[in-house]
Image (cartoon, rainbow, N blue to C red; front, side, top):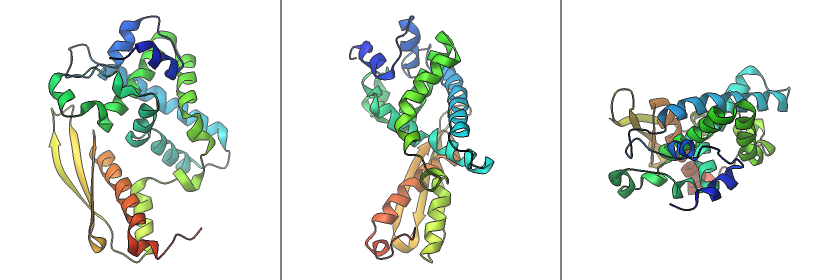
Length: 234
């Protein structure tokens, strides 16, 4: 593991209790004392901080829009992106099997660790400190935020794009459900039959897995030669 102080510098917070930081980086495959409870706490803090930031940022956001934008900002894909900016994979503590199968770069594990870090900061220093950490990492995203970019979730944007192209709706299929009943991992497929596009997404809920698959399908759709003949109308 690299010097943990480098991670703290990127995070913008120095822990008084280093054991708390290490716990936030510990996957359940590594030790009995892992990060899942901190993840639960961090998820609540994250939703509150991002929700408040959106509420203060633009009075034109409706309740529905606020909910959609927040959902996109706290989703697994966004958290994975944040995790990559602070190189969290270099610091994750994983069991041997999980490490060998690329767990350090698995989106769900990276996203969960980010939430655990937020929870750890909150647990040690309270809401204001956690808010500062969250907002520091989210500043580039919030600065570029617009309703057009993040106002709708991937499934909605994909369906609207397909309708605009007069193509049939996507087909979502659950490929697998693994893990204990309270710690399940869903793998879902999104299929665009007309263009032979098939993508898969993985998350801790069916809905999130479908959203992840839809996001990849949307990227593949826009890159498809047939679709590039029909650019979006702004």
